[in-house]
Length: 428
Image (tube, rainbow, N blue to C red; front, side, top):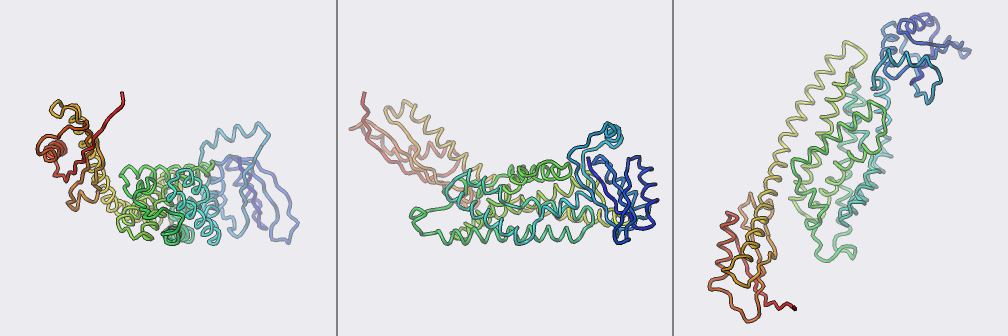
């Protein structure tokens, strides 16, 4: 339930009471004895779904917009009369005015926002370098990215230019700060005793996950956008939703920053693409869902203008996502091809171990060096094969060529194969 309190300007009391009667809600009137600008305070308990219709009728009736109308959440109302009101005003979403107010509150002051973002990025960067998923998730609790992501969309839908601009600026500047923070931390740590000698960020699984993104990564961003809007318009807990949105943005942004620190263009490109696709996808889903939820500017003549802006932004976002998704699709295909070669090599080596033609030889995969980028640059896969043999045994003639031919036939790809023979003796 909500408690709507209207500070009634002098001469407008009858207008407010008639509107309450017309809406079918209960009210109580308290005489005001302040400076004389207001003659009464009208308190109206209503379900959340009734707030917007009541305020719209007050506005249409001509209530002075310079007056105060305060909407507060009522923790508990003890009355059987609320049941009838709830049945009459059925719905789960909050009013446009509450939505606008909550969105503004979700975007904190710039100083607070950037401090929390720097702290969150620093923790996430440490988690990436340590390959610690728990540390990365913990950093997301601190990240304040949910507010700006939703604020921009709310501003467009309700035709609040200041709110929309603030949301966009905070998002863009915030991600820039996140990338820069990770780059500075990476540069400061590189070559120190805190990281092993010759440390390569591309070998860290948590970082590699952000540098080989799949098209399926879009589901996290799209789902986060949907969850963010639902949590906002239905006034439910948003902490976990904020974590989901931050997970889609901060770790890839930090990965891009580490790519800058280590001078890896591929890391910068793939992680940067992922963070941009996620950012645009969250904004796209938020815009569409807020409009479909029925939110509009309170001035009827501004609805068409808001719809035009919404439509143009959706078109731009879709086009940008489509272009960036080509990179994701390319990475997905390259990753699949590289994994397919490794799988086929492993399967063929197992088959060769069971082949009587090789008698007591046992084949083991040592290493397959084939990256997704090699699929497009024409790089040749390099395979190291370990072969165990009993002491004193001799390998067949042209053994390395035979192994290479078998593996090439299995993978359908030209390979560079190195065979390392190991005399092996096992205890009984």
